[in-house]
Amino acid sequence: MRYIFTLTTGRSGTAWLAKLLSQFPDTQVHHERLKPDDWGLNTPDISTLMEYNTKGNTERVRQFWLQKVNFLETNVKSGTYVETSHTLGKAGLIENLDLFPEHNIVLLERNPIKVMHSMMRRGDYKCLGNMWIWLLDPGYALNHSRPKGKTQKDLCQWYVSEMNLRIQDLLTKNRVNTVLHKTGIHETGPLLKKLGYTGAFYDPGPVN
Image 1 (cartoon, helix red, strand yellow):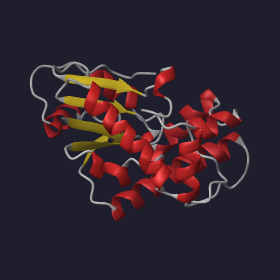
Image 2 (spheres, helix red, strand yellow; image 1 turned 90 degrees about the vertical axis):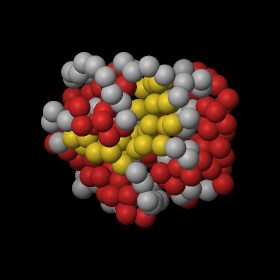
Image 3 (cartoon, helix red, strand yellow; image 1 turned 45 degrees about the vertical axis):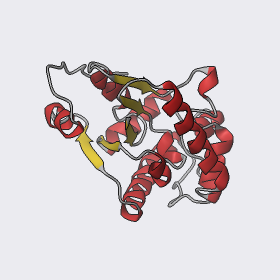
Image 4 (tube, helix red, strand yellow; image 1 turned 180 degrees about the vertical axis):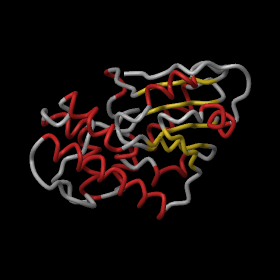
């Protein structure tokens, strides 16, 4: 089975990519698995995220990925499994790619100012729980940077910058087969070609 995952910030096109790839046969697609049974199994829970961002890719974090791949190998019947989520990259996805022998990583890039403004409009950093479930806590030990202040703008701007620093660091330290897609630029056809998809498709347009 082949796996396709994403590496990106939030608000950068993961929902769009899920709708795009769901058009193709023999492909099971999920965008941010959020059902009750998914937490701790397919989607990292708060404890896994805190562990990874405080101590790194520990045995406990590795165990999350082991149980995830075992579950998918047992339950997915399609030839390609797609999961588009910005959360996985904050919990050891890249460091544990050896568990997914055949895989592609789609690196979604969107203008960082647009990402920041989108986050601010939703008030993403107004909820403390949201920091731990979806985003990043500015106090995590393994952060590459710190926010300049405590306003919503400061925190959203920091998040985007921090994620971009992390992504570059992960790609530098690990040999990863990435496929770049710049959101907002008409690269849908080339993206699908690089992922091995052929045939007719429609561009679902902006999502969320």
